[in-house]
Amino acid sequence: MSPHAVNLVRGILTTNHTFMTRPMSELEIWKIYRNSYNGEPFVRFIRDKKGLYKFPDPKFLIGSNFCDIGFDIDEYNQRLVSLSASDNLMKGAAGSAIQNMNVLYGFNETEGLKYTPLTPV
Image (tube, rainbow, N blue to C red; front, top):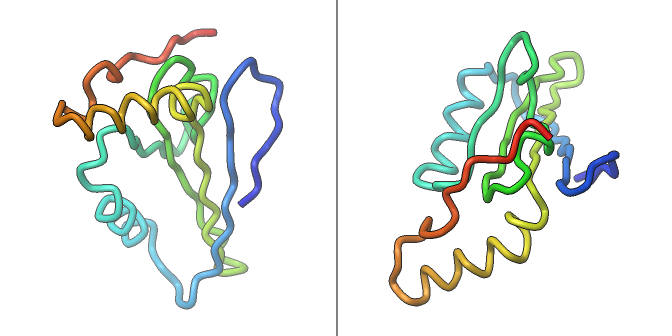
């Protein structure tokens, strides 16, 4: 995992490299991600072939409890390059505390956390 220090007021972007043991299609990887995060209310998947939202970007998450995840395949090296972005204040300590309190006291896990990100910034 490589966390990136970028020119942002808040937020974090990470890059994760995984070497695959066999060639995998984009569809197979999507299925793995969707199965792994099934039912997680604050995980969103980002992957557009063109445009501004091609990969996760911390500036589109400021003020929210979401974590955006995307990936690309390096077919030459059989490597999966995953990217994740989050607001490290909301998704970090503050949002985690509220989410854990909700679970502890039997409230809906998303109570008080389903805010739309503050974009544009």
